[in-house]
Image (tube, rainbow, N blue to C red):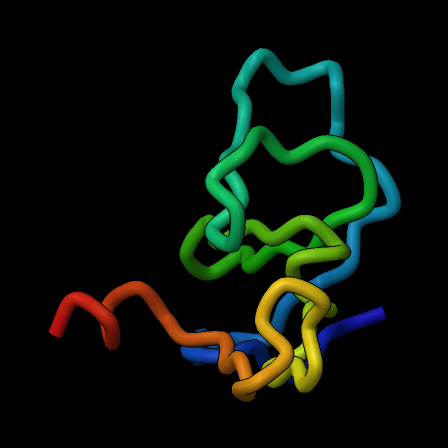
Length: 82
């Protein structure tokens, strides 16, 4: 199972049902910056990792309970920093 494309990532991502716990190396999710555990997507080309939930997050959210008046849009950190 592959995620064909993700916001701002040029390579295909491969679905991992579980991270390999035999390795002592830990990986950080590029979406939320937390340790990757459980289902995730990864890129063998560059070491990019995303939790399944972060990878599947919607690009836009309308009528969020805490921000009902405006559309929320997911942006890459680099595009925010300018």
